[in-house]
Image 1 (cartoon, rainbow, N blue to C red):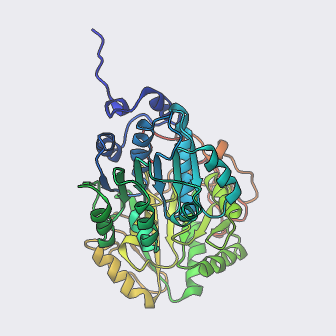
Image 2 (cartoon, rainbow, N blue to C red; image 1 turned 45 degrees about the vertical axis):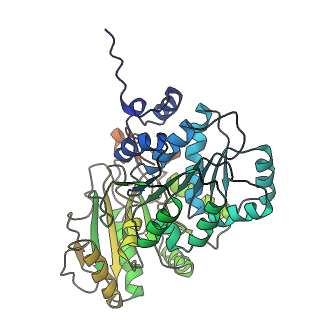
Image 3 (cartoon, rainbow, N blue to C red; image 1 turned 30 degrees about the vertical axis):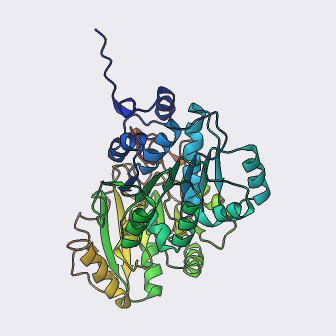
Length: 447
């Protein structure tokens, strides 16, 4: 007798057409947050899900949103709110890849895009919208979009949405939706303002706590580098980029001006680098992200808001050039690496005036993010998880001047390793070739 027991996504209630599209992307099995959240979302429950970025949370709400969509109704049925344009663009891409399975129309609404084109598409009818709060409110004031028939609202990266001052805008958007909507809140941490939002706008939400609120993924090795001042800091960063030889590296600064200054300093020292911050035009922001995703540039220097929620496969290293001022930001930043079971290295720089933040983060992360006893002037304290990312055989890049060797999109199958060329000399990128590349997607890779 044929076994008819459903497994994987089918067992969670996802239709075969969606499952087939997932398989084409190399996603065969659900990740823990998807297994936990999808049945509850399909049942209509309001849910607060606390889960680390990179754990697969986007699919956890995208699949139920598509599964419950009514194709014949051309009003806005699903809304996702995002704190940044980049995250909104990524969520839109995810929806657009899967939308053909159910015949859904998808649109992104955020600043930097042509308003007239957005107005034209809205007039034609859109069923799913991914938006930043500010631009969505502009359309609500124009009357070009109505949310009174929305059945599902997702607030993604809720803690960061509130941290960056979007609370009033989020509340105004929610007030313009109908009270019968299903509300989903996804967040890496659950500070008091997030809990207030849940109490005010959600109906007996069920909490899914997929991780400790202040614990980085165990796959991330952490290290602290003490330096005397900013000049020593940039020199040490260049040295470490040469030593670590990252496939892709994110470098975080506090402000746009700091990003610009550091990017210029790294370019002067021969590092292959791009910048990402709010002063760039939308076209330049998208170009920088595309170059980084396709591994055409090795290092991306960014502010927190510009890099919020970035899901880029292959980020092997994160550098906190400017130390975060709280543990939640620290966890968010270093969560760009060590994703979906991969290992990663997070390096945090600290000058003497940063000592209070070193202690604050260490205390909040239950026993410390780093072992104590780091020496001054650039000595490193290895994280409790161990030393920096080990260099596997064949991971290095070709000597400077060679051509990059990579699969389409900058990635090669994982079984191919990362190229057999040796490491670069001198610490600067110098146009060296990138051997191999990160592998193709594994089973059930989260987004």
